[in-house]
Image 1 (spheres, helix red, strand yellow):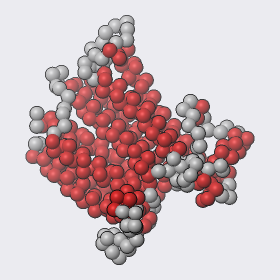
Image 2: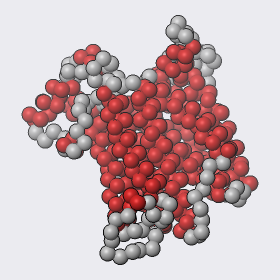
Image 3: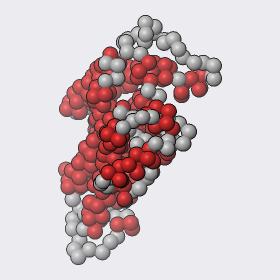
Image 4: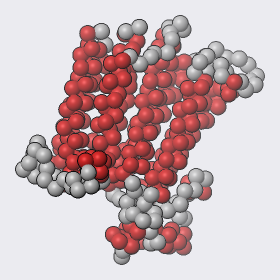
Length: 349
């Protein structure tokens, strides 16, 4: 076991990989909940309502009228209030404050759900050899995610009326990477529970290709959210009666348009989704041929649901609950893809 977990214990216990696997699956569900609330926070423009990062004291919301007035006064100092929400009532502020507060609380809960059991399992010497460092890395990733979250919020407190879409993408993709790592490790521990001689599964070359294709789609989706690009067109498959939408600003060059223009980013997110879907369907076919019918069918079902939700989001004019469902199913798709790629890796060893 890693030296990081060489804590004294009154008794040495045999590793319990099945228990650890269930724990990681539970944490993965919590991460999906955080992603869901993060989507609501974004769509309700609530992310800048808390202007300070207080990891400990920030657990409690304002508890009396004076505290609420003080917190609202801090919000009034930032550009979002002064340029967009000037005149907002205290009741309106409380509504947006709630979602950002809940998002931060759930993030802290994920941290506790990782660290506290990890210390307990380490103290009981219940972590299988070779897994200590990986579990510690997952815990550290949660802490990093909290710091990235504040780095994202800070981008909208002085000169902008919203957060940087680059930082938002970093925040979301880090959460999804954590989710994939939790699922992969849970699958490894599940295999170890069934066979004590099982070794950790390695990524195949095909898996790397699928991950890269899916990464591009997730990145584009995060940019769509950060740039509010979903609102530029509410028709499908054409965008405002054009395949390639009018309104793309090329004056700053192709790279600036690719990374900052809402029309172009929306267009790319729409059509790269078909490439991502094809890659995932080919993965499902490979799994089916190897006898992993359950993983294959589940992957196909979630890909179809995600595509339909994406189209529905467009038609609805970015209805909040449809868009949140699209983001949540996207997170579920990442988890299922991680499980499917793990199954593919075990089948090819």
